[in-house]
Structures are given as structure tokens and as C-alpha cells.
Image (cartoon, rainbow, N blue to C red; front, side):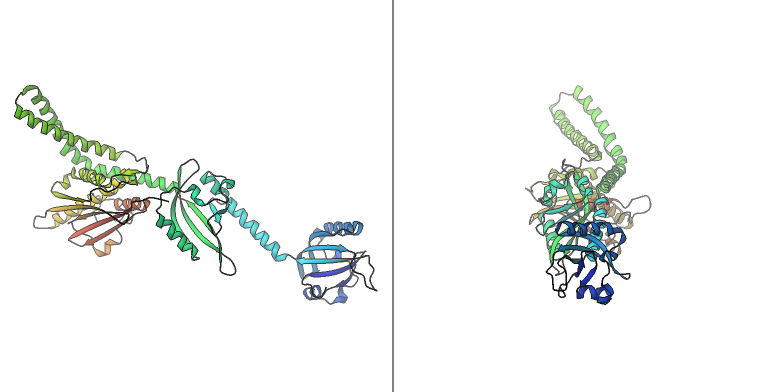
Length: 474
């Protein structure tokens, strides 16, 4: 008994202490005589006294072993939470009645503290507004909180044991997830923005922090993920994109009205008159050419109308080259672009990729409008006539689309290059720009898991480089 690590007491049938082991003596800081013939239940906390007496009486009457948890005051200074095991008929000695009892008490103070801490953390986890999940090392979910159930639309029973891919949107490339696994497997936290799908198919966006759970031996035993719901933020971004888009249309409205609307009305009237009066084949031939130009102008106007409509934000197979051509046609309508040469070098046979067509067109138009403005600024600052030129390239290399817009405008100063994608940053004079166009464009490209970079030589040229993954697989 003396070598047993837990507290051990021997009691008489009256509950008096007749023996105890060295562990009990050591942690009570009292000598053995202090406990002699003292009632054991005098050590029990008053709140637990009834439970202990019931357990002891039950053992006295039936000889069955009993178990009870009580707070025990070995001394006024030493109080522990104990799990008490009571057993009758210990092996008697010549000096001890067989009608005696063995008390083995395990100190569970730290265990109780951990249980209390765990209960607190569980209460926080279950009642926080942030979705939480825990997975094992294989990526299978072993816990999700109520907020996660709410935002995903799945119940915990449907998620536990499954991989998070059950609600994956398949919008992120393989490299995206490979980078995440490489990071957390190395014991480092990973942060990223993720688009997932609810049970009903609706998209939900979260900023997620995935942190490895590491045991005392520095071994990864699981992963803890905390999400911050970005759905509302994305909705606001959509509204901002549309607002900024309408602003772009507004800057073109005067040019459209003057350069397209009035000539189109005059041409249409003349065509109708000539159609009624002429029978000359030559005139009919030329009239057919006029009709084609009217059709072309009408298409531009329709494109402008379509461009200004709210996006449905649905990913669809998109022809990037066609999107570039349409964007240039939209920008060419503006009065500022009248003396600018547009050159296309688009790789033939590019496969279509999943994009939101009008959003990526918004990116192209924003970049092209900035290029036109840069050319005009350079022209206004120069004493010699400047011929504006904008070149557009498209390439497909190693499953990545590269789109480049290059202009020979005023360029960007080195100190401004790092700020061009910041919200509300603009080098234009007050009232000439909001500083939102490139920031919005950057956000759109990033939402497609792409990159938007800028290269420039101040006073000479600027090059915008867009890279987009061609395979939007999970």
C-alpha cells in the first residue's frame, strides 16, 4: 500500500481511519498520528458528504465495491478533487478486524480542471458565429460546430467522417490545395480565401485559417480550421464592381451619344431614302456596305448595353480572345481613343476556360481605359505629336493563360508601381478618376485564382500581365 501512487486509507466499520499510506501522509503534510482514529468523512467537503456516506453505507451493507467523486480536505490548506474507490474485506492482520474497508483515492484535480476548460472551450466553439471544424491527419472531419452546420446547410452527422471536399466548389486549382497541404503538414498554419458550396448548391465564401494540432511529442495529430464568413463582403464587392462598371459606362456615354448615336441616326435616315429611290446597281452595292457598318455600330451599342447589365456571376466557358476583341471595340468608341492604334496578337485555337465573362471583360476594359488615359496624358505633356498604340497579346503556356496589354503612354513612376492596385489610389487629377478601377480588377482576377501584375518604364510604356489557370479543377 505504501508503494501505491494514489492516496490509500484503511477505515473501521465506523469510518475511522486506522491506517494510511505514505502518499497520503506526504501530500497532507501531517504525520500519521494526526489521522489516527479520525473519521474519514470529516475530511470530505460538506457539499459532497451525503454522497460519500451513501456510498460507504452501501458498501457496508452489501459488501459491493462503491465509487464516488468528492472534494477532500486533507488539511485546510490541501484540498483535492478525488475519485474514491471503497472496498470491503481487505486481508486482515492479527491486529485488524476483517470488518474493515480500503479507501483508494485518486487525485483528479487536474483532470477536473481540464474537463472544465474543455467544457468552456466547447461552449465557446458551439456558440461562436465563426464556423469551426476539426479534421484528423487524413483530412476527415471529426468535429464541426453549429455555425458550420448553419453556413454549409449540412448536419454534423452528414459531415463527420467525410472529407471537406463534400462541400467543395471545384473552383480552386490543384496547386491551391497542394500548397495548403504542404504548409499544414509541415506544422505551419495556412490562411486563404475559399469558395465552397452549400448543400443546396449556393456558394459561400470564407477566409479560413487552418492550424495543425500538435501533441507533446511535436507530432501533428489533426487540423483545426476556423472560417470567417466573407459572403456578405463578396456581395458588397459585387455591388462595388457593378457601380464601378456603371461609372466606366458613364465616362463613355458622351462619346457614344456623339460619335455613335447621331451618325447612326443620320445614316439610317439616308439609307431609307436611298432604298426607296434608287435602282442603280452601284448604289445598291455601296448601300449594302453602309448597312454592314450600321450593323457593326448597332452591335457595339448592344455590347455596351449588355456590359452595363448586372452580372449573374455564373462561371461559364469563356472565349478569352473574343472577350479581348469585344473589350477593345467598347473602348474604341470613346472619343479619347480616336487616335490610338490597337494591335491584336492573339494565339489561335485557345481553349475556352471557366470564367464570369462580363467580370473578366470589366478587367480588360478597365486596363484599356487606363492605357488610353496614359497615352493622352503623355500626348498632352509632349510638344511633339505622339501616336498612341495599344497592343494585346494572349498565350497558353503550361496550362496557364497569359494576357498582356501594353501601351506607349506616360508610364508609371517606380514609387507608384506598388500602389496602383490599392483602393482609391490614383495619379489622375481630382475628378478624373476614383482609384477603384485597378483595385476592382485585381480582386476579380484573384477571385479566379489568377494573378495581375504590372511592369512599366516611367515616361515610355506600361504592361499589364494577367495570368489565369486554364483548368479550374478542385
